[in-house]
Image (tube, rainbow, N blue to C red; front, side, top):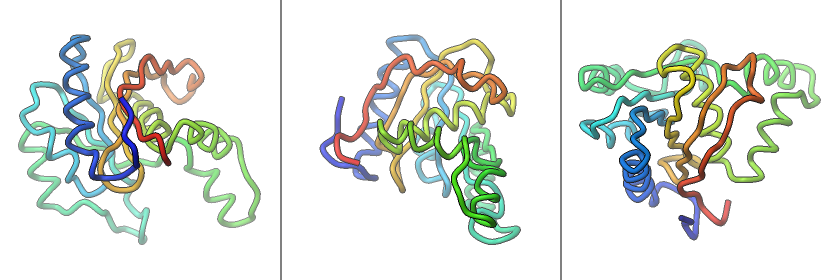
Length: 181
């Protein structure tokens, strides 16, 4: 399924498509990118285990977090686990680039995945991050939901690998994504 344009106006349809595919494939885990928690909130009571992957603390400003304490408490109370951690395809490489310039392997990998769209890159990245944190089981297909900026416009069935075996990650299906990105 393809959306004509990228962006948050696709969020509800992306979530609907992801849940339909989860039902068809009997997939029990959803991993969703959500910096504020708004997209993750849409998955409350969806009947699946949901992991929300957010920006790491300090992404915008040292010590700050984009998601409010109130939203975090609501998601946790509703059974959605929230992960704040370094982005798999950024981390220390980004710090080196910011300090000294240049481009580094993880940034090349991220840019390569962006050839399929920012949302596909996000889906692959958050899947590995959730697996590394032990929030989803190893060896199971999951559905990842990501986007281009705010909201969600991409969903994919992924068999993630741990970061130390990143290239064993398999994107089994792209459920939906924008044609223009």
